[in-house]
Length: 201
Image (cartoon, rainbow, N blue to C red; front, top):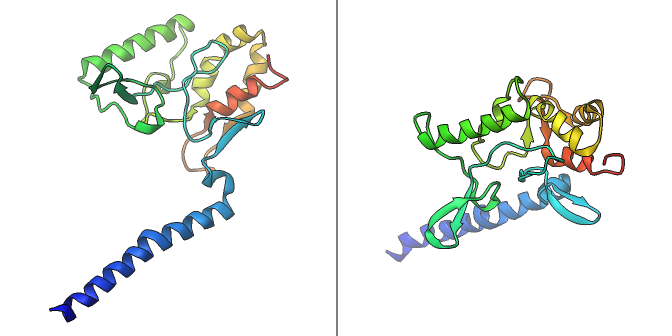
């Protein structure tokens, strides 16, 4: 019996050490050497302080900044741990809302967001990503159309011309990967930090 179990136990321990310890450590070390910034979380610093990551969105509410997609992430309710409360861009709880097209809560939320955006830009076409959440709830990017929609508000709040703000958007727009994969996008954190740069206001 022991002769039959020994090879199984040895193989189990060997594979655990190889695939559960050696391989992950090797890949982590290799990634750190080849892509150090990405392996460290693509952190963004300002004046020596980490202010965020290029990979995780943040909630911006001031008129002086561009706003991102709605986020459906939640956190435990401090008053009742059996319930949750909305916590936009909660990186510890990446998730979508799982609400379907027949959901009254989803319809009400979208109607409210659309009404706010219509008040901001009467008659303008509202980009879909300004009223829809992403699957992760942590999307750091918006479409160029969503950024351009917000130009008048940001320009007015900062005392800049709309052309100056559009130029910042153009400078921070990334195209399709290899020219064919994905869609053009604007990293919200990078764009908002550019607004705060000395050339901005």
